[in-house]
Image (cartoon, rainbow, N blue to C red; front, side, top):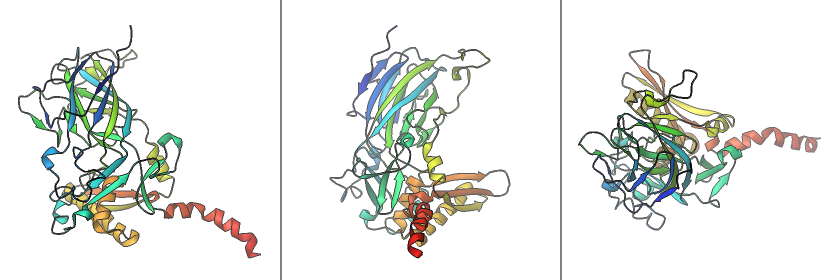
Length: 368
């Protein structure tokens, strides 16, 4: 049997709600490959040609546009839709922004606290000429430059991925939702990953959007490196109760998925970052995990200001794209412990530290 012909969807008609009533823009057979052109998380409102004024004119109602939906033939409620992310190609630019009233420390980054809109946005050059090449070929080795001496590894992923809900109520694309997915902002949705959704309606009605070139766990300021993106996906139906190929294995279609599951590829960036100097870690401790997370982020921002000379808005944006927020422990009540860490490789000094033995050896003959 011949493989289904790849199909393409342009970004001309985004939608901003998950709904069973949306008309499919494409119908495909199970096993089909689909390519989608995605707008960035700001609906392409922030661009190199308008960066000076974009923050002041930004329309939040246009945030997180999704492209789709796609109807997958043979997919019924209760079946599992397997979405294989085959390829992700980011645009030539990206941006990171701080929006008043949004983010983990929204009350500390108000318009009054940072009145200059230019200090609340960072434009990234994602072209080959604008990036640093470092690391192994397995990760691509490309790093986007935040400012001289500060860079982050590029690892593109999909911020928005989901299916339509069963209920009549339409759900916003701005948030993640139980069962259907949505604005997950999970950095494991990279090329090579397989994402599993429990179909809620016939055809599943899959949509995608919100391309990210890089992001830390937590996306603490509310944005990643937001970028337009082309995504190539393969969509396969796993029937409810299906056989997983013997040896006692079952496909995920036999499970009740109350939220999306992801089979993610190895993260080469994690290994390279940790092999190149480790991390700086700030901790937050308290009975409220959200407040503990806020304390940990404040601690990291303070270190970035004091030790790396960043402004507070710069520190907040860098933490959002490069730092990892994590629950360190959740069992020793009454308090939770949350960590916020950033790889030391983010900063130029790690390279000097790596070269110290080589430099010392070169100097010995000169020292007699």
